[in-house]
Image 1 (cartoon, one colour):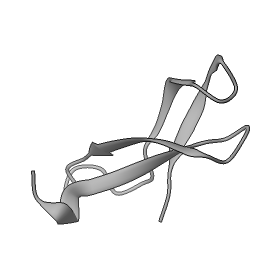
Image 2 (cartoon, rainbow, N blue to C red):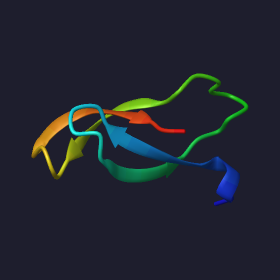
Image 3 (spheres, rainbow, N blue to C red):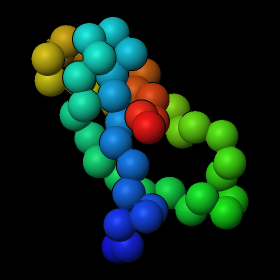
Image 4 (cartoon, rainbow, N blue to C red):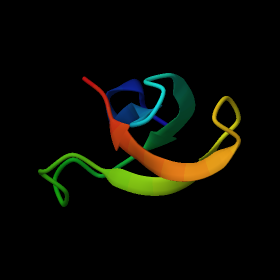
Length: 51
């Protein structure tokens, strides 16, 4: 996995980074938003791509 494709996912509720993933930046221009489990909130919340 190349470093330029790596992104961090931050919980919308508590603002903590809990996940690292990758995306194809040629196909997806907008920021990625996924529903993931946050271990600090202990709930499924939306996680947004950070800068």
